[in-house]
Image (cartoon, rainbow, N blue to C red; front, side, top):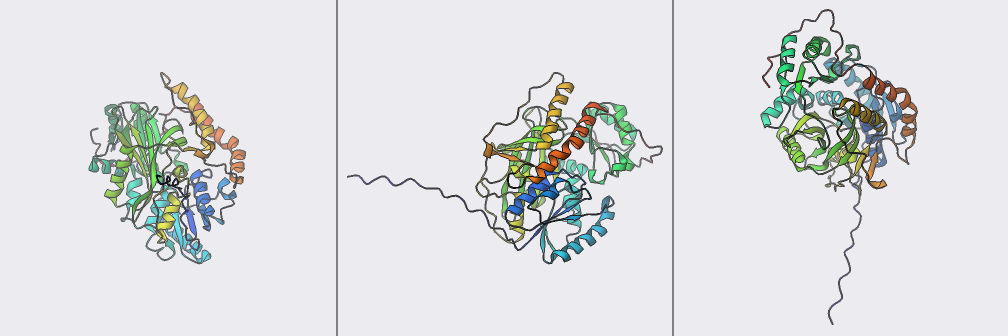
Length: 451
């Protein structure tokens, strides 16, 4: 008689990695955005794992402060732009450390915070745990001009970019690059509300490029003019990852399916999808730089199928919770906490098809669809909302175990979101620039390279 068939193998659920709950975390956000859902995602992820979560936020705390997983909010006084903010921030963080009473993991959640934390890493040694980075790396990566240079160095696709040294060179570059084009300020974290400038602007005329250049002094950094890569279905992609001593155990590639503002803004709906080309580019870039910690990269695919690197953010992206191991809950912020506290970081299992939805941005995305239908000629057919099972969707705001931030957001959105949407869809055209100041010295910023 033949032996009986062996019983089927049983796959046991993976045990979630155990974080060191004796080490608290301080989430640092210097950008005064009370509706940043990435901050809420970090609060919930670490708080659910049993970590004591402190959040340093601007004067307007917003809905994030309502989370049950937040141990305490620490209101940050207004800081000046640029390096002059570092001494008062250092004093603030030292006082915060004294109050906590033991070393904490420090996770910046915006570019300005990441740059400041890297600059202050040495004087904060012993108080905060931060990934070891080459000197000045976050500032270099967040600088749009430095990113363009880095892409040339590594032969990574990047839109043709000019850095004009005069208003006339700006107009000439607009002619050479082709209209419409994208205008960016090299160091957007230096922009102040008083300047009345956006970090990224769609420029439709040579005169608009000339006028925008005349605000260089108030912007605080160089103006970049960049060839515009047309958007459309399947063109906008992102990579999120956490790089530890053992490589990149947590991360993935995703496609942006809805955005606000249209084609250039934050992700309203994103889907986790494998993209080997984007992943290879991200791993190559991080390896070349010796990057350690969390990063968020944005890519756009051109008509030839090449993926151009548009942005390098040396911190968690707002939709980082999309890339969560569904069995263990491991994501990039948990991976960083494990790594910095000396614990092993197991490789996360992927969940392609998983969807991220930002409810407030989805409201904006409705306006995005309307605006796109008006501005596109002819209107392109875009992918609709992703259809997956309930458990395959990560929502930015709503959580059954933590409902108060969602309720606070929905109560505030009619006063803020609709006002912003109305301004973007019904007011000044995208290429409009504010009137130039009465007197601008316009110092040279470097020769404008031919595209």
